[in-house]
Image (tube, rainbow, N blue to C red; front, side):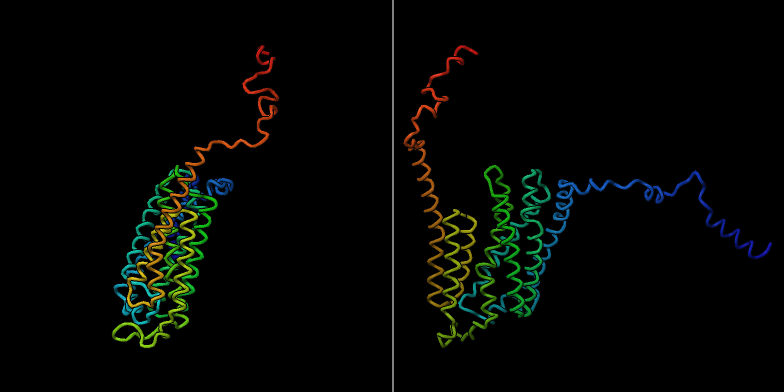
Length: 347
């Protein structure tokens, strides 16, 4: 036997040919008929697959948001608070107050993620997939990037990121409000979907974006040991007053028109964060304290007005317009309480 024949026998022993009665499991899977395309293109199946993606990506984005801001607050040097002290403005808030606000946003989003995993009602699933979608995930990623841009003192980049954050959250809030409005029949949707998204939106729109814009435009001052700048003009008090006045005016209009409790709490929280950070120009300080009182007052007045209006409508009853007594409006031309003869005869 030659060496070539010996090598051929060894190869056959190590790698025997498959028997005709034996089929490799991989061949069985490959030869199996594919799933029909219609099973993955139906609206219900697409919503189910998209919901699974959201159940994975949304909690991961929240963890990224939490990890980034915690690292930028406690590990990085200088941290978020140190940057705010180094570049003070006339609207710089108390960082500890805003830290509590951000913590409340995280807690609310944890509740959203729990509802996202345990949702059973189709209306709730549609609100999460079609109303919120990937917007919240994108908002969390952008917020994580903002923390990094802030500690690197890249204020223009931080301003752009906050603009994207507002667009993400504004889109999801408007989509929920128009196509999936809150109802009393689904209180969990209101508490764990609408409220967290609205609460998250108010933070960058009311204070973070204006603050980063001030830093980008160099509307800052160099603090003296006593606190405020030596020259009052260096405080840029007028831009600060205009920002806090109009942002709070917008919030007040929303609170009064929609009787929005979540917006009221968030706007008050931001106001307290600004006026609790001393020193402040008189225009900014007085405006923030005034709106801290006006926001809940406007909410209560609006609720009382709607309650009294509802009671008046109940007392007044249906309005009878002139001409409503025409017999043609009642019983096909017959008077009140009359019945046609054919009906009375049982025909």
